[in-house]
Structures are given as C-alpha cells and as structure tokens.
Length: 327
Image (cartoon, rainbow, N blue to C red; front, side):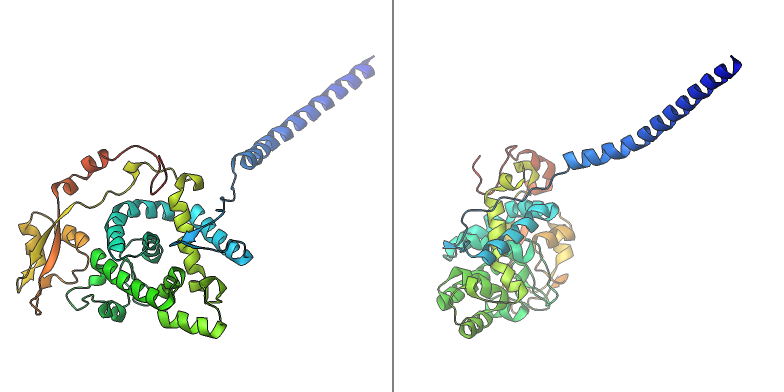
C-alpha cells in the first residue's frame, strides 16, 4: 500500500513538473510570437500607384517603353517614401511657387518648370559641390551671362525673383535651339552643348531615346515624379493642412541708392535684426554696401504680419489637400 502511495505521489509530482515546464516555455514563447505576428500584420509597405500617363509641359512621356516606366517608378518610390524631404518640399513650395509662377507665365515658360527649381535646390539657397548657387543653381559665369550681378558685395543668384527671370531667359534660349521642353529640361542639367552633342552622336531627336550620364538620365524623371505627387498628394499618402505649410512672405520694398550703407545699422533703423534682413535678402554678401557702380538695389523689409508669425499661421485654412488637388 505504501509503495502504491509513493508511486502515485511520484506520478503527480512528475505531472506537475511537466506542466510547470510546459507553461513556462509557452509563456516565454508568447511575447516573441506575438511581436512578430503584430509586426507582420501592422507593418505594411505598399507600392505607390503609377500614373497611366504623365506630361512635362504638354509632352507625353512614353510609358509603354519599359525603361521609361521603370525609371519614373524609381523616382516616385524615392519621393513617396522619403517622407521628411517631400513634406518639406510641400511646405516650401507653398511659400515660393506664388513668387515663381507669375515670372514663368510672363516669360511664356510652361508652369511645370517650377518643379525643375524644386528638384534643383529643394527651394533652398543651396550651394552645390561645383559651386552652383541659389534656387535655380546657377554657376557664376552662367549667372553673369544671364544678367545676374555677382561680385564681392552681392550675389543675385540668391535673389529669387531675379534668378527666376534669368532661368526663364536660359529656358527660352534652349527652347529656340531644341524645340522640345523635355530636352530643354535636360539641357538645364548638362548644358545646351552637352545635349546637342549627344543628340548628334546618338542620332536621336528626343530625351527618352538618349543614353546619358546617371544624373541627367534621372533628371526629367525626377521632375515628372515630383509633379505627379504634388498634383495628387493624398493619393501618395501626404495629408497636409493649409496651416502645416509655410505662408508666403509678406514684405515691402525699399529702394537704396546710397554710396555707403552698413546693413546692421540699416536693420536697426528699421526695427529688425540683421538676421531678419539677411533672411529676406540672402543675396547681400557682406555687412557694408559700398555701391561703387552707383546702381540702386531693392531691399525687402518684413510687414508687421511677418513679425507675428503665430497669428499668421492661425489664419491659414484647416482643409486637406494642396497644389492642384481638388478640395
């Protein structure tokens, strides 16, 4: 009888040990399994939609050609999933497109070329490794040849209005040469001479048939991709309210023709900081203006609304959708 009791106690003890071990093992496994199950079910990346057709300045991209379609898809993928950069482009474009668009229109340049400035510089006063500067990324010699003043005191490549006018002059010259806005865009990246040389060497007459260096071969597709996303932002996951964007700068113009101006003193006289003066007039290079040429210059000063930025932002609409997307 005693042996039977010991036997049953042993069986029960073994069962308890097995149960504890099994429960402990399952408990250890559950968090790991649950984590990966959640990861698999919650984390999803989708291929963004490809447009059925896309145009640059009215010229259709031949998406029936496999490499054209795939190159465009690459740029749409990059800009769709590089969220922070594309969001900043939306914000800056709300400020600067209203400045750029009328200048393009006045010069009979297709509106799509505002996207060229966007991919060139991100609408920042960028400086390239080669020395190109400003929204339109002019090299010094090219800027001067198109009427921009570049000297030790001022650099009008940083003047948005004047550099946009210079860009229009270049684009019109290129269109007279090529008769194709797509080739005009390519020439903005590699020069008119470079494009013309490749057209002759390769015996083709359009951008999409050219074999080019890696930068220029992506260039037009980058413009097309950012245009596609900007015209249908919610389709690509971008939900922006008006108040999320940067408002246009509200400024007044003061014309200066003095022989000597200390810009820090000038700013103080107008109750703003030197930093504010430079933000609005980034083309001023040094703190003193000697004006040896005796030419007048226009200086931007902030309106009162700009000095009350929070109030200005509150006035902006709360609606979703920007840049051509119907609300």
